Image 1 (cartoon, helix red, strand yellow):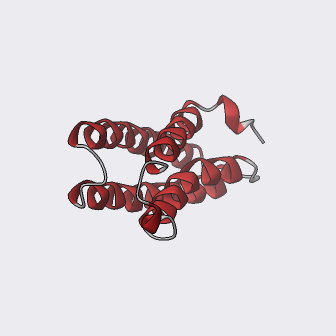
Image 2 (tube, rainbow, N blue to C red):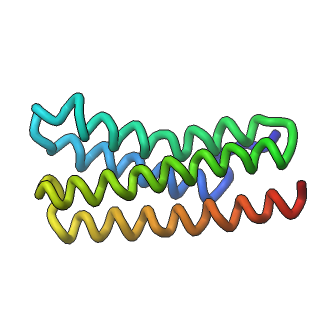
Image 3 (spheres, rainbow, N blue to C red):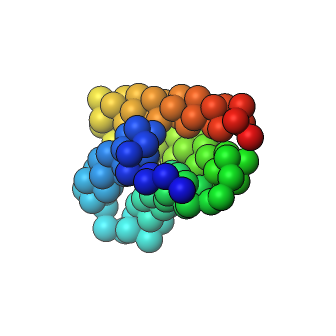
Length: 119
């Protein structure tokens, strides 16, 4: 078992979650149990699955959790697009978050491929 906090992909995804929380805190209160909650849940799922996968006994188990994290990242991608299209996110803020998410997705893919090569 490795300490997930040392993994760059976890660190980057954790920073993404912090940014998502800050920005969704500015959403209208009537979205608190709707889109705000969904965006936060999807974002939080990414580093959570990395952390859980790192505690598993094998690279193949870890790779499975990375795959789940990638699914959560795809879900977050759509939810951010929806928030942008509903004009809950300024275009520049959306571009910044989308760019950060793209980088996290790239890192998840690379790390997952590395795990599969070892497993």
